[in-house]
Image 1: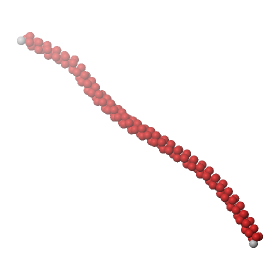
Image 2 (image 1 turned 135 degrees about the vertical axis):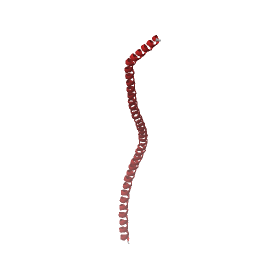
Image 3 (image 1 turned 90 degrees about the vertical axis):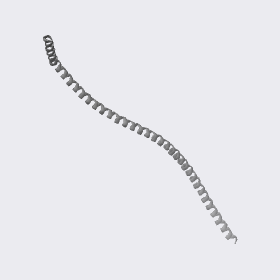
Image 4 (image 1 turned 180 degrees about the vertical axis):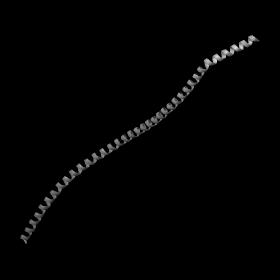
Length: 135
């Protein structure tokens, strides 16, 4: 049995030596693992923040894209309305020119009628004078 006790003592000594040597390594590994978990948590938090900002940016971009499409549609609609207004303006300008020409023609006719009326009055006046002479 002495040999068994010697073996147990030897194994105990070996276990103590291993414990003294390996314990700091295990402790350092645990500390390193805890630090890695902490850094992983911090990194996950930062990644979450970046993803949230990216999502907000994407939503803002989508909103801007929609607004841009709406403005382009509005621009097209205003272009059509502008074409209609220009066509109406051109029609009104033509109507004004036609009315001005009609007004000049009417004024010319009025002058002719005034001149004719004056001649007729003079003719009537002469006829009345001749009538008075014959009576």
